[in-house]
Image (cartoon, rainbow, N blue to C red; front, side, top):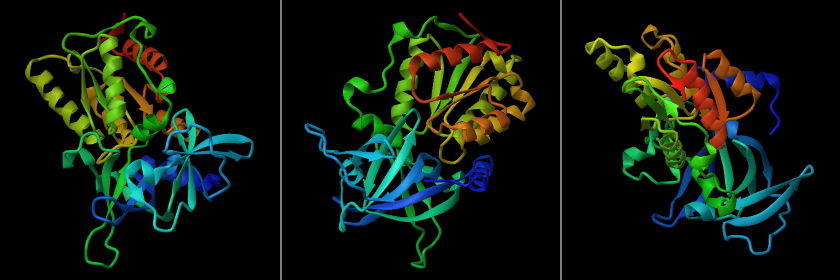
Length: 328
């Protein structure tokens, strides 16, 4: 999906103000209620939207795979997104969404594309509030009334979980402790506070932080991370301690309900209470546009998801820049 520079700049500015654009699409009727629901993906993850091209089936492929497509010399795997989430298309698989997730490119077949909605992350509610902690949906976006008198909801898909699920087992993201290098040292009771809305990403982060010997807490949104930081700052003050005795590093995703990683980082860097607390961005939103914005909001580093050794090196580097901690 070609983007003129003015359009890219506009969307970059949106990201810096806790806003984003979501591509909305339909996958057909769900098995439970027989309804055709709205789904969404952040526009920054979409490289191209196109009418369904000719697809080459791959012998022995999994049921969720439709095969591969040759796009301008690049062979890209194509997956049946309705099948993955349990929907049945009414008019067929008509549209192909080519997505970029971290270090990979893949395409998802959908029934139809509806619109692009401009939203504030405050309009997005974590899916875990519904009690389903391992859903393929990270959150629900509250949309404007479409005239029916009721507020619509769009389900924001957990692309990380979906990509991990459809990737061959031998190629899936893993954490091998022996490949991560030296463990880290943290000051006092200091923790790594990690924020990510994907349960798959949190599981991988937990394995990594355990292997590095770091104390940690995991939260699922920037708002939760910000609230936890404020609570830790109050505890540190009451105990006449430094914030660095409580927090050694903030590790955050960019796309999160309620408050995104850009806003979280900016809040931390503009608050004197957290002076010197390093912030490391760990996101599937790769590319120079996002990396430039990461630098503008003052983050100490950026790592594209998910390569365990690279992340470990970035964590050690970020901790080494903190007044309260150092890598081993």
